[in-house]
Amino acid sequence: MTARLARREAALAIVALLAGVVAVTVSTRSNARSLPAAVGSYAARAGSSSTSVFPQRTDCGAVVGAPTEGVAHPALPCGIWIYITFRQRTALTQVIAHTPALAAAPFVLTGPLAKRLGLVGVQTIHWSYAQAG
Image 1 (cartoon, helix red, strand yellow):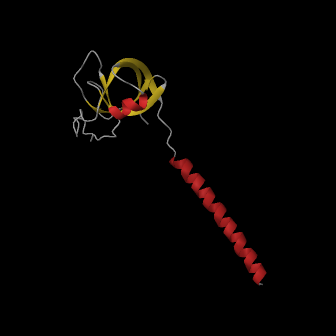
Image 2 (cartoon, rainbow, N blue to C red):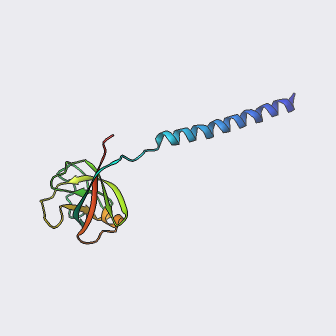
Image 3 (cartoon, rainbow, N blue to C red):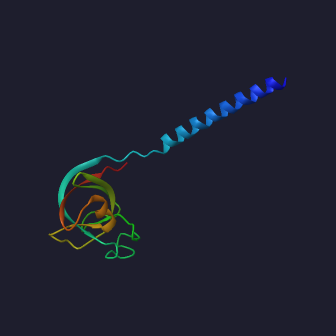
């Protein structure tokens, strides 16, 4: 009877382990976010600025710190998600502030975002809206 009980416990342990693996796999898949589709494609000039140039709390209500990635634009609505592409690198980011309209560069990227994209100085970028889900 003891050997039979040991086999039964081993079988139950294997079933429990498999159930755990299945549960982790299912929860990982359900938590995976797919990125929104890009809508439109536009070219514009963009410059970068250190986050210290942005106020600690922007006119859009964003709290800006040293690692903050975001973009300022004079006309795009606060909080809108956009894709910015520069030299084959694309980032999904959010409008976190408004800036005065500048012909040289209507987009101002925070330093961390510019660094991630490899943007230095004022350059031409491509941008598109992220489709709302």
